[in-house]
Length: 481
Image (tube, rainbow, N blue to C red; front, side):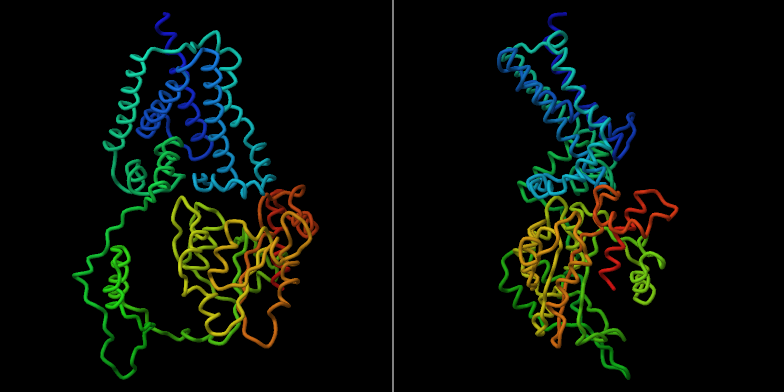
């Protein structure tokens, strides 16, 4: 019996980590306990448990007990923060985002509401640490172990980790399988469901350090003819073609990836010009990424300006917005660049180091337009102070050129009233806006835009959260008048 007690801390770590994985999955992405995925999660969790046990068996029983409580507390803190983050954003944060947590804590109200809303689950995650501190001395051994046992534990780590990989290999290799998320792609929501949070964050950390990107098989360029325009007919077709010397670029380039890109673009057939090509030449352009906007915000009685814009503007019926990993910033990156963001990093912030000649700001600035950008929240948030000037904009935000009444969230209408006079005039202009009035949380006690416009929605037959959401979008609607 004494021999068994020497291993009780290892057993406790194993059960605690597996339990945390179960709690997180149950209250976020879901998943069966009796599945291959759960076997994978358990094996990787046991490997982490053995590592913690090794660390917590190197010193005196008192020190080992303190270290064990710290390990369980840190693990519970990570799991709880991911659970709360998922409750707010319906995804999990990356290791890269955790490194920028100072910015994220500007939204402490949303975090607090998420913690309160997830109170029971958070308590369950911290329960192992609480039990260890309360009765751990009586049921768990914190004794220092011999070196021979440490060697055995090292073998167990290898076996458990290898076992997890073996189960991954033995399972399906198709898209959205555990294998695909372990080796081929990065999508935290599905990865947590298939591999568990411990493994998802470990892989995320490894990939961040090594600069890993998903392997992409280039098209068989050798078998594809270089595009040449068709012979002229009665009504010659015009193409959207730029005069680019790909042969010269290939000869001067040493990077194989960029060479592949040059070859690909060289053979890609250009799009044909149509009746819309050049239709708006010489027009001014205002481009807006609207925080929290949805078609559900469009109502003729509540948001008449948005309704008018939707009814009289272009309707894109084949349009889809995925759930991006970096929330607003990834969506803004797509809207401004037309590129797909890389999972696990802040793509927009990183783009500040790239040349972006084809984005609207740089294109229109080259044509002599005044190009300006505004954001009615912290100008540095998500690194916009780096990304937006790189797109050719004179950029202003709170803390750099844009002075507004302090509120959370701030008013889109007030931003328009203060900024539109800066560029409206006889000259051509392009203005880009990232709004904030539509930001969550949607309630009538912490969201000042919802409180401001409550009178317009108070009699609608919806929940308070739905009415508060519409109230925030009313502020955006007024900004569009």
